[in-house]
Image (cartoon, rainbow, N blue to C red):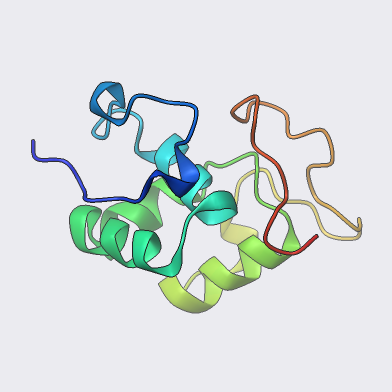
Length: 109
């Protein structure tokens, strides 16, 4: 499988040649959502396709309300489609459980 062409912005601490883009698609998408650029996001859509992204992102445990709402809008999903999303809290996943260790809430902080 080829590799997407992504900026180092979301992967500063990783060797991008060692990232498993096929089996680690969800982790790659989570990193790009929090730390990547718009170009990175568009590249993932081109590389994986919206259908695969739609099937995978509903399993994330990292997205808060803004990320979930954004994905619902872009990928024609409902908040209820996200298996681990819970309404009613300021941040759905304040502890970032099961997320990459260095994942921080940069875009909307």
